[in-house]
Image 1 (spheres, one colour):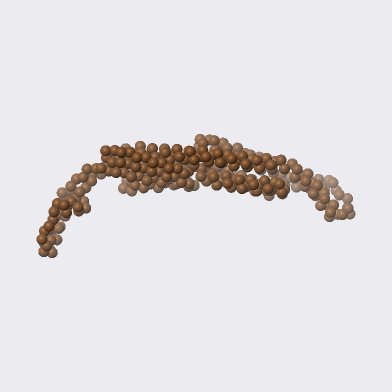
Image 2 (image 1 turned 60 degrees about the vertical axis):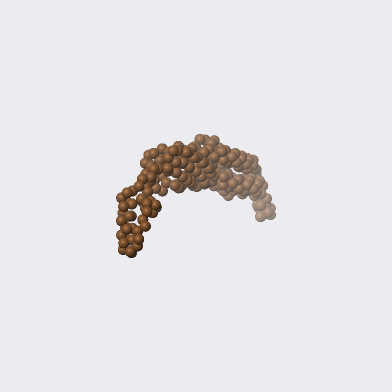
Length: 287
C-alpha cells in the first residue's frame, strides 16, 4: 500500500524530570530531507533522531520539533560568587563607592546559580518513546492519505487503459484507410494517364504499415500500467518507481502519436498524455 508524503504526528509525556513534547510534520520532497529543532546542544542525540526517522520514512521533507523541560536541581558555584564579590568590591574601592553588595545581587549574576545537566543517556531515555509515538502518528496519517491517493491513481490508470483500448480498436483500420487514400491520391496525380501498379501500391502500403506499426508501443504501455498497479498494491515505497513509469508512459504515448498519423488515434493519445500528466502530479505526493 502506498503512503503519502504529507503527514503530522504529535506526542507528549510528563516525567518527574520535566515534560517532553515532540511534533513531526512531513511534506513532499524528492529525497529524505530532515530538519530537527530543539537539540542544538545535543548533537549526538540529534544523530539518533536522524537514524530513527530514517527507519520510518523513505523520502519526504520531515520537520521534527522537540521541546524538553528539564527540572534539574540548582547548585551554587561558590568559587564564581567569590570572584564576582572580589571584583565588585575592588570596583567600588576604585570608584570610591559605598559597598552595597547583597546575596540577591550575587545570585542574579551569570554562573553563580548552575543547573545540573541531565546525562544524555537519561535524556534519550525520556525522549525516544515520545519521538517514536509522534513518528508512528505521522506515519499513520501518511497511510490514510495514501489510501486516497491510491484510489485516485488507480482511477487514472483505468482511464488511460480506456484510451489505450480505443487506440487498439482503431489501429487495424489505419492500413485499409491509408491504402484507399493512397490509391485515390495516385489517381488524382496520374489522371488515368498511366495504369496503376497494384504491386508497387501494395509495397508502399506495406512500407508505411511497417513504419507506423505501434504494436510494440501498445505492449509496453500495457506492461507499464501493470507494473504501476503492482507498485500501488505492493508493500514497498513506490513513489520513485511510479514516477519512472509515468515518464515511460509519456514516452510511449509520444512515439504512438508520431507513428500513427490518424486523427482518432491522435485524439486518444492527447487524452492519454493529459491523463498521464495528472497521474504524475499525484505521484509527486507518494512516498
